[in-house]
Image (tube, rainbow over the protein chains, first blue to last red):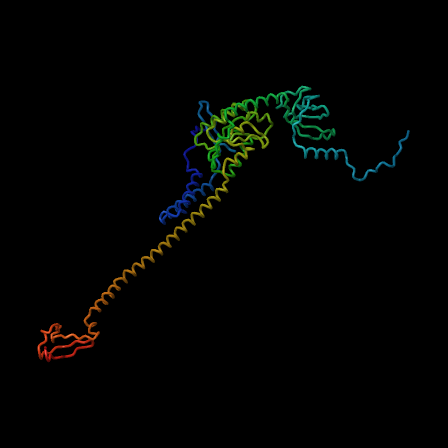
Length: 81
Length: 386
């Protein structure tokens, strides 16, 4: 068990990653985008897609248990469920 | 006295059942088709045996049924009820084959008076929570579509946590579960649930909180009807899902939470998206990216082609325009040419040194000069200058 300060700063949540991807696709589909911008958007989109797929493929559920220590601190540890 | 054999008595066929067969068939019928039911009646002839099992009869004005409660449940139930007590019994109808006796196997006994008191208390809490707006639909928060960090307030050893973990591992393994353990039934459960919900509010980066437990007898779910637990749940600063017992069980936490799930598994289903759905969404985004770029490049190619056409037109014009001008100038020059005038029948006199003789004074008698006509030159001499 170790002291916990809650969620560590991790990678961008997948929800936001998906929103950004949707936004990239919408911009790429807009009429006013020129070829250079379209290429840049495409490359960014492909990179994000690959990252999102990798994250889904490698994801493993983490289960932790949290309890209050004697001094009122929160202690956390991995839990096997 | 001799017994008379009645020949009218039907002769047994080969299909004769043994007593055991009959009792076994009845047992199958009763136990397969009737589940546990709540039965209201009055206790009589209750006896707690040294083995720990209780046997008693439950009766009303018309009928009675033999009941038993096995040691394990009897220990939980406390003291055997006194004869004459009116009770609710949760029991599964069964058949005691050795005695050929139908009976209820009880798993819970609750005095009707206690239920009355419990019901009154429940109504009081419900009214208080309602008055304070804890059931208002307007205060319900939406459940996030992609919860990545989920607190689960339940017993760390219970089936509920196992069910939640199984479903989330299958659907959305990108999540993190933070289990805040609490007893969910019996003495101390209320306080532990309140404390656990308080701990939830101290966790950073949380998206959602599931509170609940697996199925159990009505009294086992009582902590989830506690006013303190309901108020602590309402104070949780992230959206909440209440999942207590089975589909048919409803607790006050169900009304307070932002979402009521019928079971802990259903809560987990509601808490996270299905990875297959997300994979399909990613696939569709990939196709749109590809077709978006392809559209852009083909539009750019068309534009380039159009530009090339315009450029080629412009070059053509740039080359052709001076040529036209030259033609025009040549035509103008041609029109001005004296040769053109000579072509109409005029002649032009020139001196032998090539000067054009324009005036009479330039013609002296006997002087030789040339006459230029359209197709050549004629030598001439002035005879008379007039």
